[in-house]
Length: 248
Image (cartoon, rainbow, N blue to C red; front, side, top):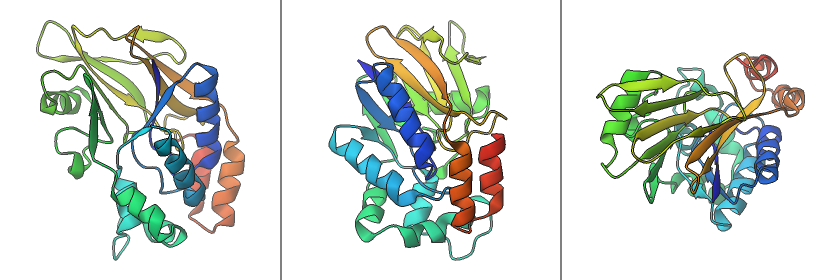
């Protein structure tokens, strides 16, 4: 089975739809959404509605920090990430907010574990930026877990543990399948669908082939300028529109 892994959609319906289309064209049979459906972008309602449709079709979903903030926005915005939470909350209806609120922090399937941030305290929203953080996340997973997939950091990276105790870091090439056999333990941050931050505006996601045990990171062109225009028309901070155009 080919499982498409998508994270950090951030209310970017243009990127979301483009990645879903690309994944289906590449044989995806199931979808997993790894948190942060909303936040930053101009189309939270459309994104949540589409996520609800996918959930009804058997997609796997976990909660991200922006999903949580959209349900319970902070009383005062103190960070860039807080700045769209109240606006997003107001856009969503009760049913959509309840959908986000009920998402689990982690979800396991066979020897795979899905999480938005780190398995080491998923509700603390720790960033898995390096080998040390990846090791803490992987060590917190049950011993039988071979593959941990997450997002949150908006970059695509693969970590693995070989014969030694230290994790090794691997930077993947988009479109090239990477063998991820079960005799090792693996952790991947699959990047951001809706807000890339590696100076490349193309959307990110990955496909996990559960039979061949291969992971393929993908980049997808989409109407990022249209998504940026929507942010400006919604009177959201222009910084978020600029970021989509520049990919950073």
